Image: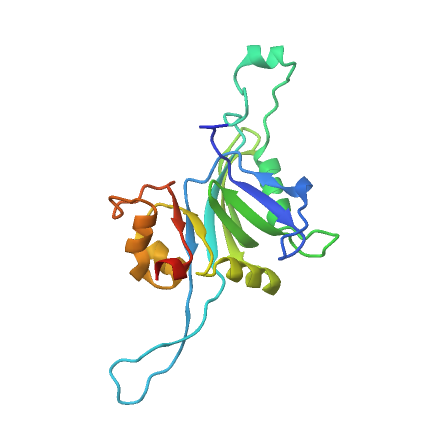
Length: 239
């Protein structure tokens, strides 16, 4: 539905091919994270020639990307559908029951980090939120309990999760083929994106940004609006 708030979802998969989804274990956030951070890493060859003041670092590898998010787990009931509307609950025949913080945390961990019996390891996951997608595995999960009821039961908690990118060699090869500069790409502008930066990601060179601006009829390409879809044609058509 247009204008509806999109919740972050976590799909669970048996392995890093991401072909067999386990729908029964999928997780949908009660409250969306306030933000997320992505860490890109480059591994460089150490060492420096004797007698030199500076060095020309050599690239060796690109380690897996990390994704960090903070989740709010709220057991007060304020995030539940029709939580305080007694008339609607009565009409629908619904007896309102709060989802506890423990149940929310357990659901998150079962979908992401708990060892699953049939496969003897945690699930691989795909996180989706709007146009953002991340494939990987849970690397760390810390829960901070912030609010308690009179019986000492947690009413609110913050979950800090770190996911590490993980895809099979077969899937990596397929994605590299899809990322080839010889095919047409459609990309959604994210906050902080610039046309030269997006061109650099796709073609490996930012010099084509003016041609991309022409293809998309961009007048003010220096100020891209997040959410805008841009087309990047095959490189031979604009070279």
